[in-house]
Length: 272
Image 1 (tube, one colour):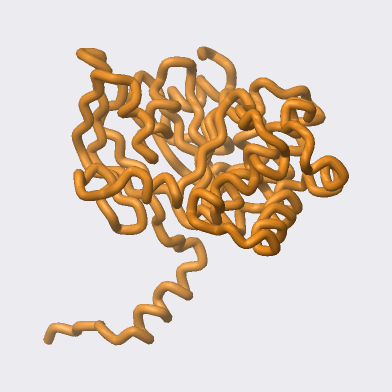
Image 2 (cartoon, one colour):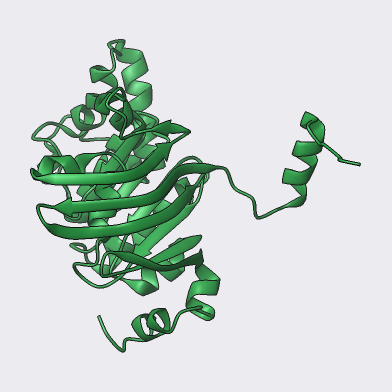
């Protein structure tokens, strides 16, 4: 006798029983990226789950940032780039020519290594994205700006100078402003490429606190050289080496009991 389970309630029950199950937001299968003849990413299989922080660690030149930039197709800006394999975002193939890159980037924000506020006021930096998407109502924009700055733990520091240049902020404040700018478009995902590497320890701590505070609202993928940072803030960690994934696991497992000797050597400072 063949038993077929296709009732919705049965599926829900099985999902609820597995407390560790998370909905995939990004699924990467057999991803290869070449810069000219240089093979930067090799057969990458990786899932980024909803409302989690996924850290990507590894030595310089291992493909971490290249991988992150494939997720919003910014890698294509580099010029002679060849991509093969599959990347799905919320079930949609982002490498399909029919997928508008503008639509993808409206759902996927990005924060870079060095803060890059626009040469505008603090207010206009945050309001920029909503205006691009057609919001012109002043009261609505005011609400979005305040809410985004509050989520970025910046409102109390800047509420009295919203119409002054963003360049007047400290480096850490500018980076939190860039995160607020991402949050203003209500993204599904924020990609962070070493967002604290240019910051002092106090500013780094504030950004880490911010990441922890927003992860229940948005999915985050973060590239970091700082393994202590990955251990502090991420739910899952992927270790890249020479363009390949060595392993990916729950962060506590990867740092506490890595399954590959190369991971153990890297996280214990034997190379990299």
